[in-house]
Length: 483
Image (cartoon, rainbow, N blue to C red):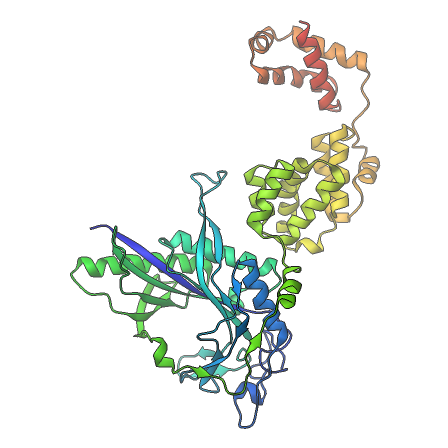
């Protein structure tokens, strides 16, 4: 029997705010354990929560970026559960009136080859709601210690419909969400710091059947690659269970990404197990049109929309846009340099092939580079005008990256400008090259345009590598047309 997987993801994203969601105590990572706490975080008697508006702004922005309906009224509920990482023994969350409903995440599945655009589709969302994060348990050999610094940090939960059917789709979905949150300035989404966490609900069913199978929740997927690997592992495990005549049990399983194995943690809870009820200390929140409009004005263009625009407006190939659009700062850098130079394709090639290589070698961020868009645009213009040849431009770029000087100054200082070529001398070199290569001449005359390259080498050799390639090409074509 052939089976189909059905996958839904619950993605938790920590919202980047200065303070926690219901108190003014600071939010952050890397502090001494249990120093970012106060009576509200610890649930001490008499401590009352107060809503953090910046967290609401951020989740509304996330909803608008993902095409959600923003609820006119949302409320807060207490989710009851008893676990050491929850200091109050309940979590303030949203149950039946979340702030964001519906929406979708656009994904791209890999093409047949790396330079071919893959299939695009939209994965529908059920909801996005806001809640407070819990603490972190640190397990040792003989004990477990709890750190409440993370408790109370604003956390959004993005819940998809069970609409994905492969681990690759889930991987693409999580990648797209991460890029959207970073683009929007909502979160840094660093999985190593717990700012992005994911649980996967996986079931299988015979192909052609519409009824959902019994779902298994997979936890501790602490990297995007482990999400893909864990889902693939669970699909294979469930198929093996059914093929042995067994029954899939609804449960929560722990996935060990290093070992590639999973084990049962507990039976899966249902909503009624959490005994939700409205939080008596927090009023419902009304979101009016003016509030939504203000946030909408702050929403950036997302990567896939930017990619389509770069292809349409700048005639960039898919391979270049795939490099440029996933980092918002890099995309902005490209546009600035492209507008200054008027040569977007050349700028894109320099960024993809040279700038990113040097940044990687230097182990720095784009913001720390000494090569500004103006530097790169000036270098492109020198090459396009023929004032500097490509090989010399590579040397100029390396020095420009190291020192931050403008390319014109480097070219003058190091004598890297192309030597002006006497037009009569260049024409004679071209005539000599054509006369010496009858085979290439016949091929060019027969319609093989690339045959012209056979003439260029001898001409550049005669010019000691300093002739303007564009002028060489134009002269050769003129002479060949009359041959």
